[in-house]
Length: 79
Image 1 (spheres, helix red, strand yellow):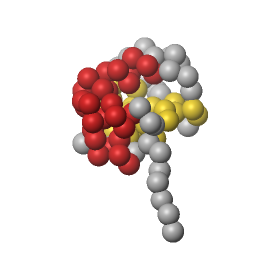
Image 2 (image 1 turned 180 degrees about the horizontal axis):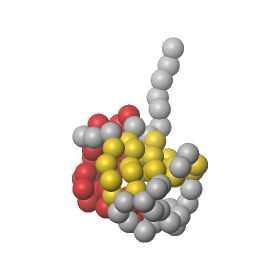
Image 3 (image 1 turned 30 degrees about the horizontal axis):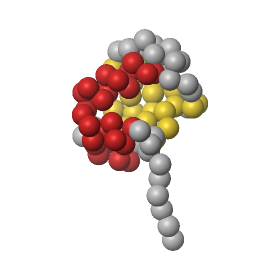
Image 4 (image 1 turned 135 degrees about the horizontal axis):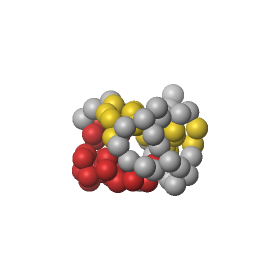
């Protein structure tokens, strides 16, 4: 099972900062996350970057037990 870390709006939409999800690829892991956390999470995910072990990767990337998958929504800010 990969560790899924959620930040900002993704964390709010899912109601948790992290979880364990078992899936063979990033795409399938994200599909499972959407099933688990619903349409609000899916909406945030559609504009987010996904990194595995600190690097942005394609959705076809395999994931395993020692991997950390981070969902990073765009950050808005200002001064």
